[in-house]
Amino acid sequence: IRERTGIGERRIVRPGDEAERNSSLGAKAALKALEMAGKRPEDVDQILYGTCTGDTLIPSTACWAQKKMGATRAAAMDINGACSGFVYALSIADQFIRTGYSKTIVVIGADILSAFTNWEDRNSCILFGDGAGALVVERAPENSERRILSTHMQTDGNLWHLFHVVAGGSNQATTP
Figure 1 (tube, helix red, strand yellow):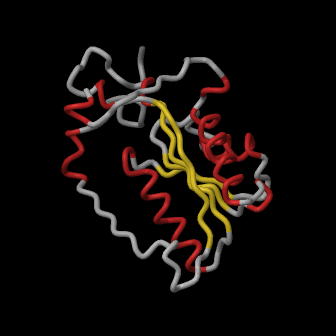
Figure 2 (figure 1 turned 90 degrees about the horizontal axis):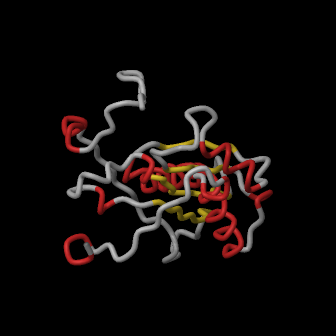
């Protein structure tokens, strides 16, 4: 696996364990990021949560994480961009910071892909695991080397068939 993909370790959550839900992993990562940044949950204006394997459809996983973090004044939303969700969330955070709408944003990327992985498909199952990461985004001086210079995103919806989950949306209900 390491030779073909570069993946050296995969982690899998324990299903049903409250401490290992998507939002629990994300909240833990966010609290660590806030600690490293010298911030408190009360300082957070927004939580942008990149995930395609949320705790629930409604409310967003960002809302669950907000509750678990104690970030009571933060707006919270999910960004479902699959593998690109964290990068999309970071780009959106950059825009909110640049416009002055928000001062402190927590960006979380977390997924529990083991819940959707077909472990019989050896072509793809080796790629997926569970985990979370987070960072704090704030305005930096124009000449700072510690700022987002720019972001560029693209999508090609014509390639949907290369990587998708058939059921679970409005096209086809989830079944056992």
